[in-house]
Length: 282
Image 1 (cartoon, rainbow, N blue to C red):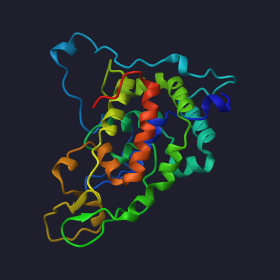
Image 2: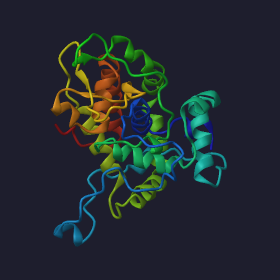
Image 3: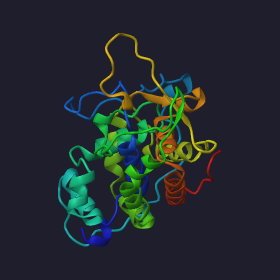
Image 4: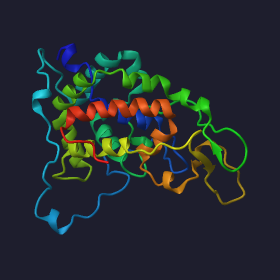
């Protein structure tokens, strides 16, 4: 596989995964040492309806195989090595070591993309390492805005994601698609088409509402008991119930700051045009 054919992994996936890395988790988080990533999504799929019992739903956004670049050299035989080779060609060895959890990468990608459209994206499933530093708010009182300097924590990762060549990224996504499809079905969606879910999650992220300046207000989740929390920065939630009820991916976009949010939305819009010809649903 030459450098051109592996220069990028799908931008949607990297963006989604990057969003996963930006996600701060609250008291619901679980230890990183917990078991394997090949498990059901955070929120189980709804039971099949009478209509779906007759067979899988029709594909809404079929993959255009003409977008894939044919390899000009032998490729590794196992998926993990293929991803590792492609990511290092794209990001460089040091960036892969810094940002990526390459073990079970295909399964991590499928699970994280799906979970960005759900209420919670379990950190143990991320294909990327969490963003360093602590989430912070400013001011006093029960309701506080997100601190302006908080967005700076996400700048290196957002800059990397938005600089990726979308066409070449989607080309690799198409080439690796059979593996991603298989991993998605193994999550508990037999007969469901992964690219349909990809487009669905992109549309959901693009529909993330813009909060009024200076941004959404946060409040501490109530914890009953006399023992004080040793990590209160993990307990913040949106004061507006409508914002707190958004999907995990949408809540992440609200958290990263207006400039980063617009940059990521622009990249997602660019990628969406490559993976489907259907207009953005609003």
